[in-house]
Image 1: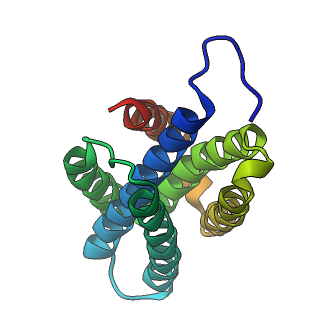
Image 2: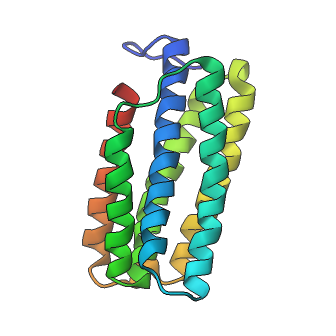
Length: 178
C-alpha cells in the first residue's frame, strides 16, 4: 500500500477499509429494502430485488472479514439502518425513476471509493483487492442498469443526485472513523 505523509499505518488503513465497506454494504441493503417496501410489483421491482441479492453477498463478505480480522463495525450502523431505509423509501415514493436516480448517485460514489481502495492495496492484501475489484464491477452494473431505467431523467436529478452523493461521501468519511 502506497503511504503518504499523515496516512495511518497499513494495518489500520485496511481495518478502516473493511469497516467502511461493511457499513456501505449494510447501507445499500437498507436503501434497497426501503425501495422494495414502497415499489409496486413489476419489472423495476424485480431489478431492485436482484441488486439487493448482490448487495447481500457483498455485505456477507465484509461481515466475514470483520469477524476473521477482529475488526469492530462502525458505531453508526443504527443510524445507517434508519437513514438507508428512509433514503430508499423516500426516493421510491418519488417514483421509480427517482429510486433509480438514488442508485445512480450512490453507485457513482461507491465506484470511486472502491477504485481508490484498489489503488491503495498492495500484494499483501491481494484477496481483499480482488474482492473489492469484483464488487466494484457489480456496483457499476447497478449504476448502468439504473441509468438505463431512466434514473438520470427523473425531475430535479442534478439536485437529488448532488444531495445523495454528498450524503454518501459523508457516510464514508464518518464510517471509517467511528
